[in-house]
Amino acid sequence: MSKNIDWANLGFGYVPTDARYVSWYKDGKWDDGTLTSDASITMSECACVLQYAQTVFEGLKAYTTADGRIVTFRPDLNAERMIDSANRLKMPAFPKERFIDAIKQVVAANKEFVPPYGSGATLYIRPFMFGYDSIIGVKPANEYQFRAFCTPVGPYFKGGVRPLTVRISDYDRAAPNGTGHIKAGLNYAMSLYAIVDAHEKGFDENFYLDPATRTKIEETGGANILFVTKDGKVVTPKSSSILPSITRRSLLQVAKDYLGLEVEEREIYVEELSEMAECGLCGTAAVISPVGKIVDHGKEICLPSGMNEMGPITKKLYETLTGIQMGTIPAPEGWIVEVC
Ligand SMILES: *Cc1c(COP(=O)(O)O)cnc(C)c1O
Image 1 (tube, rainbow, N blue to C red):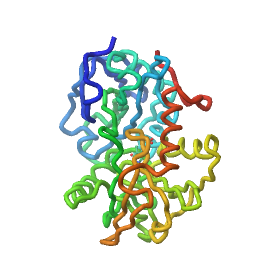
Image 2 (cartoon, protein in one colour):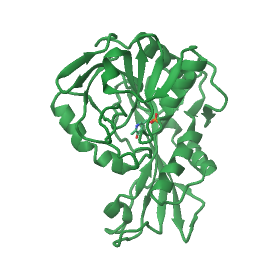
Image 3 (cartoon, rainbow, N blue to C red):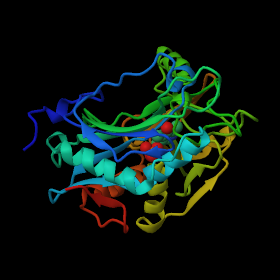
Image 4 (tube, helix red, strand yellow):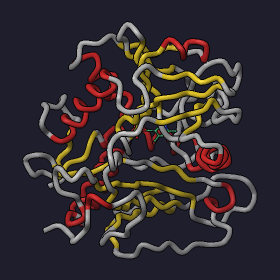
């Protein structure tokens, strides 16, 4: 039985659910972990996460497939990425098998919050971990908490697809040998100024450049970028400071194996933008949101796909990947993980 929620009109906001998963790391090891109904966390004013932002997170979805199963999409890749993120911030890794088990437990315990097939809504899952004990001299915490909660979120393209207008940002996101490739709250804290500024000036998103040369496109604050060239090739920026989006990696495989397209991961220069036929932002939330216009310091680059719809190849990619996720198109081995 589903909760009595108006799925179609649900937004993207936090709605507390019945249960969340918690595991503590103390004395050099993780405890067994448990589900709890307590959505609050109490900690010292000097907790490492509060003073030095020692925290990493993940984001994935659970949803109902066409044949009524509740599944998640490639949680093994979220588990691996969280281990990479933890290593970079000197946090203990939460083991991959336990991560997947925690996701299954938390979704199963909240199954009444999983939106029905066809509603467009999904259950968004947020695993995260943080340094918990008091740290004043700069060093990693000794104690950590891993948590995973979930919240139902509404359809991303409510009222239809609306291609985005983005600007080339003068703010930088990630230094060449910094932390751009990990999923850490710190990368988001410093993007808030730039995104609020973009919104105030009428842009939906920022395209960040490589800070070393400021000539190459990297990504937005929370999504990777895919382009389709005028000769139908799918290209995506290559850089060590881009967050390795699971959606983007999956879309590239879909482009190659399902659509027979040529794909390329390479450096993409700002100068080349006017040669692109289509552009989309990819991430778990929207899968792909189309970009219609890129503004480079007053110079408008209008993608031929326009401001009313997704480009034809972007649309095929979107439909194929969402079909795989919803179980209407056969999935590559291991992509769909059943919860219940
Ligand atoms: C999470 C995130 C993405 C998207 O990754 P997915 O695994 O596809 O959800 C892209 N860029 C940044 C900076 C992110 O934090």
